[in-house]
Length: 240
Length: 139
Image 1 (cartoon, chains in turn blue, brown):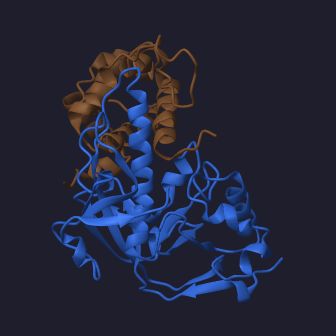
Image 2: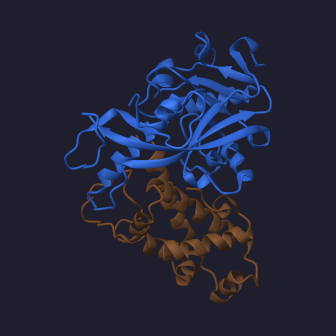
Image 3: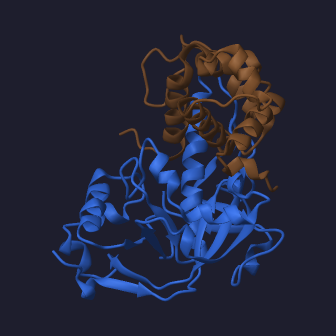
């Protein structure tokens, strides 16, 4: 089945995308920063992710800042809760505040043949169940399988709604190594912290009640265009 | 907050820096690496000073071990005190009588001892565990 141009989106070169990684990628050698978009993490992953089986190269990006933060907060919450569950052994308490690196990335070419699952009729074209695409609570084998099918039909990527972003926002999921197509890649230091249902910082796991649908984000030093509000702690809501 | 280039490189020199970093900050000894890699002491010592090369297999094992370390570092927010706790803390096997997808593979011992006993196969299981904790769905 050839690529259906009516169900694709072409994203112009130099469009900014966002991605968050561990500080381990923020080396003093800026030439290495492009590795953030080589998809190698997915290749080496033993568990896969929302739209990829284990070992399948994939680059996850968002089109906007808030979706990037919402996606990260979802995983941060979940891993802290799992860490707290481990205390039954006992084990070290996982930190309730996390430092990460936000990357603003522009490519030197237009992304074409990206299957746009945000078009209303598109999911049914590849038999994607819309409910599983937008359900935030867990990942699904169905989505990994659908992505594999889409890729085998010649598409270069996938545009899908972020299941965790509360106010809309999309993911761009690319199937190839993009490190040789980086026009610019700018790192921003970003901090995440858990909050209580009262809105204060979550600091005592034995007493505080965690807000499961919001956290706070701060970029105290520099912020990308449109991100000045994050100079101070900013509440970000997400689906859980 | 920036890290040294060897954090993202996999050259022979970078592998040496990674081992040096782990010895300094995670207090892993030469003996630990001998046990992890199942490598001859003389070869490892000569590699450390650049007099001998490791086989491609051994270099691959060091890369996998570094990846596991980076995943744990990210999980503990690069807190070196917590990294050492993760390595040294003995996980009580008696408490978790019913097995869970999130049981650490080193149940009943410490991660460091588990890695020394099980070698690179243990590092793979530990790496899978931390990835599952962070990103996986056990359902």
